[in-house]
Structure formats: C-alpha cells, structure tokens
Image 1 (tube, one colour):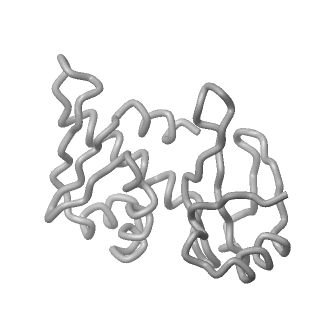
Image 2 (tube, rainbow, N blue to C red):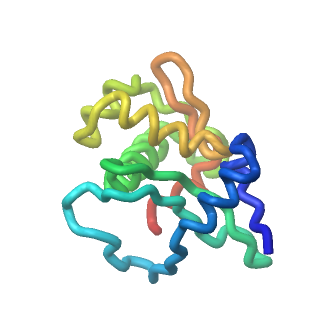
Length: 148
C-alpha cells in the first residue's frame, strides 16, 4: 500500500519509499509526553485528525533539536496577541499581530530562526507572515491547535 505524503512530493519515488519504509508510526494520546526536556534525536511528522470524516492532515514537521514546546508556546503567544488585537464583533475574522519575528522570539524564549521555522509550519492556512507582522487568518483554528 502506498501512502500519499504531500510533504514528500518533491522527493524521488525510490527515496520516498525508502524513507517511509524506515519510519516508525506511533500514536500518542492527548497530553502524552513524547520525550522530556532534551531535544529529540529523530525527525517527527506531527499528524492530527482535523476533519470531521477522520482524514489526517500534517500540522508540522520537526527535526533533531526542534522543540515541540517551542511550537506550542508560539501558537499560544500568537493566540493571546490575536485575542488582544481582535475585533470582538468579528471573532473569526483575520487578526493582524504587529510583532516582528525577533519580538515573537523574545516573547516565547526562542531565536528568530526557530520562530521563522515554526511560523513556516503554520503558514498553511493559519497565518500569513509579513514585514513586522503576523496575520492570524483563522483564530478559531489556531485556538484549537493551541489547546492541543
């Protein structure tokens, strides 16, 4: 059975098959610890069920040294700031968060390159990154992610 991984679509078919064959699939319960404090030494494709019909979608890919907590802190920080800047009469409307990536890095205790990478994982329909700002395109979806 061949699994379609859009994230790997640019990888040659033979290499993709080898990568998928070498991968280990694990399921974790909500709130379950994957590893403690030390950065991981493996790559992770973080998948979650997002659709009502049970289809899975890629949330983000993490490599050695990346932190799951860093991604979560960024999502929560964006959510807090989006809530602050939102128009209460339009709760699901896009919200501009006027912070640079450097400022976001300071807020979440990270570096600008790490925040840039984490934002890249959110760009798929959740945020839009511009000069000196991040626009939260779907505040409700970001809230669901920040709570997971």
